Amino acid sequence: MKKGFIANRLRSGKKSIEIPIERKIETVEGKRFTWTDLQNPDRANVEDLARKYQFNALNIEDCMTKFELPKLDSYDNHFFVILHFPPISPKVGMSKISQLSIFLGKNFLVTVHQGDLKPLVDLVDLCKTSSDEQRIEKLLGKSPGLLLHEIIDLLVDDLLHTSRRIIANLDEMEEGVFDETKSVARSIALLRREINKLRRIANPLKRFVLEIAPNVKRLSDEGEDLELFFDDVIDHIDKVIETLEESRETMEIYKDTDFVLSTEKTNKVLAVLTIIFTLAIPATVIGTFYGMNINLPGGVEAEWMVLGPYTSFIILIIASAIPVILMFSYFRKLGWIGG
Image (cartoon, rainbow, N blue to C red):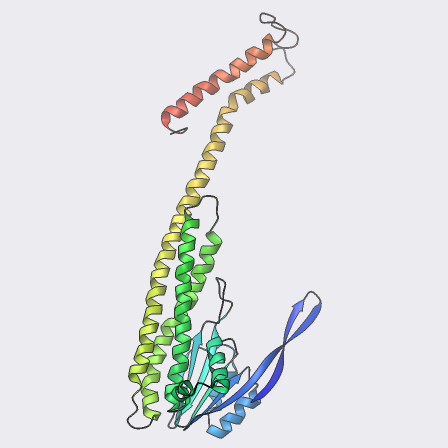
C-alpha cells in the first residue's frame, strides 16, 4: 500500500488554507486476480498501471478528469467503464457527483475514485484487515467479475438507501406544506434538486450495468455466468428509479400546493390591508378638509357648543364612523369580511 497527500486549497478572505487530502493506492491479492484501488491518485500512479496492463491513453485522461460522462469502452483483453454515484450526504442537497472509473480484465481489477464513496473504501479496508475467511473467499476467491458485482451492488444499495431517505424527507415536508407558520419553499427546491441529480445518476447507471454484464461474461472463465447477479443489481436500480419518479411526482404536488396556499395567504393579507385602508378613507377625507386653513362648520372660529366644548370633535367622529359602518356592513354582506 502506498500513501500520500495532495493539497486542497481553500480561500478564506485573503488567506489560503491548505487541507491535505489523503492519497491511497491499495493492492489486494485474490486467488486468481489482483485488485488495485486508487484513491485520489496522481497521473504517475495511473500511468504506471497503464503501462503494466496496456490501458488506452484516452481512458487514462478520463480517469484523471474530475467529471466525465458515463461511458464504456471494450477491448480484447479488458474493458473500461465510468459510473456515477452520489457521495454520502446526511443533509438534503448533494454538493457533487462521485465518479468511479473501472478497468477489468481476466486477472485484474482496477478502480479509480476520489475517496468519497464510503462503501467502496470500507470494502477495501475489509479485504485488507478482515479475519472473516468466508467473506474474503466470497470477494477474492473467484473472479474479478464477481468482485466487480459486489462493488456495484454495495454502491447501488447505498443509492437505494439515499432514495429511501428522500421518502423520509417527503413525509416530514408534508406537515410543513400545510403548516401556515412554516416556509418550505427552499426545502422543496433543495429536495427537487437532489431528486433530479439522483435521476441523472440512476438512469445512465442502469444502461451501463446492462452493458457491463456481457463484457464480464466475455472475460470470465468458462462456466461462470454472472448475469443473474447483475440482474439483481438491475432490480435494485429499477427500485431506485421507481422511487425517484414517485418522489418527483409528489414533489410537484407539494410545490403546487405550497404555491396555492402561499398565494391564498398573501391574498388574505392583501384583502385585510385593503379593507383597513378603505375603511380609513372617510376619516382621512374629513381630516383633510379640516386641516385646511379656511373657515369650516365647527372650526376654530365657528365652534359648535351644543354638546359642550367638544361638540365639533364628537360630530367629526360621528361623521367619520357612519360611512365606515355602512361600508363594513356592505363588505360583510358581500362576504369579503367574516365570511
